[in-house]
Image (cartoon, rainbow, N blue to C red; front, top):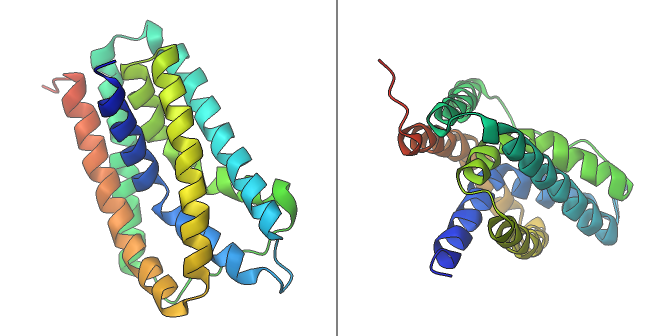
Length: 196
């Protein structure tokens, strides 16, 4: 019971830092509603399905990694570090605003969520592998359900304010890679992996 709050806070943090870019995508989807984009219901269902798929894949991969010594799991931290460096380089070279591709229906939204969130696996898998159990998975599921709802609400509110959307879009390209690098370092450090 004493691990409930730290696990919940870790899940909130993991969701938030890995889905900043998803907030931008959701905002763009809500902004296209009524102009050929998906309906509100499709966005909601598709987002929940997409995040559910990412979490399920993470749990399965974490279970598969139980046979690997925990100190070597720290090598997974290299993945978010690499993604962060790549993101920083892309942000440096970025020109203009990206426009989300139009999608329709909940399946299209779920596909965009999974494709956009594939890098989330590099964070979720080591976190779940570190403390894998029914209680931990249940906490992650509950936190993610709540956080998806919050993300949907925030994106819907932001969609009506173009200058806020632009601000999130421009800072998200720098912030997300920097956070990924920090998480990768934390994964390596907390695993006890000693390089050298």
